[in-house]
Length: 162
Image 1 (cartoon, helix red, strand yellow):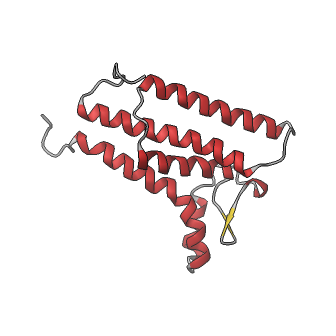
Image 2: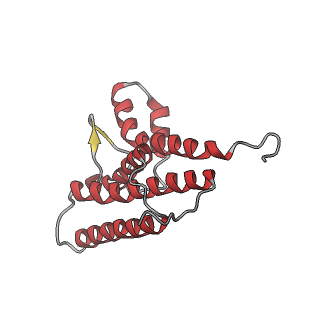
């Protein structure tokens, strides 16, 4: 039984899911808002919220509607992956399986970073977006699933799923 004034733990997965979706979409929406609305200093302030998260090198940053995104393409992919992973919350894997998937996606990002920085290929936004997206997707889906299982009192690693 929960104490008076304490939130119901069953709503935490839904709150986390909505937050992941909103935060994941924000860097994609912000440049569009800045292009279409006179946001001025407010837009610049919202954009600067991402300065500590990403290097934002111009050659590694996409533009939407003529406005640079507040993140490089790999970080933008991570944010998009977080949004879609939280939205779909699929597949329903065990915690152990999600750890493997997340490890594999980190490996893919490391390979992309290394091959790019060692000069094996130029900046490819497609691979930067894809490797970031895969990681963000897996991370968000795994977190929401774990929160749901916790809220329901279910074991983190069900025997029937992988």
